[in-house]
Amino acid sequence: LVLATNKNLNKAVSENLFREDLFYRLSIIQIEVPPLREKRRYLVISKSNNRKLLQKR
Image (cartoon, rainbow, N blue to C red; front, side, top):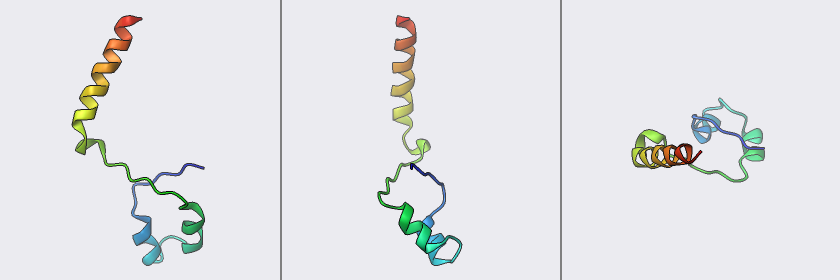
């Protein structure tokens, strides 16, 4: 399973808003992905690459 949320589940567990047993069963590997607003440079690169790919077709 791949799960995603915009909530801080560690905090939710400590505040009893999310079940601790479920959290630890699901959180085998955690990957932090920064919001795109912090990575505008990548958006420009991606947009440029997509345009080039579409032009080739």
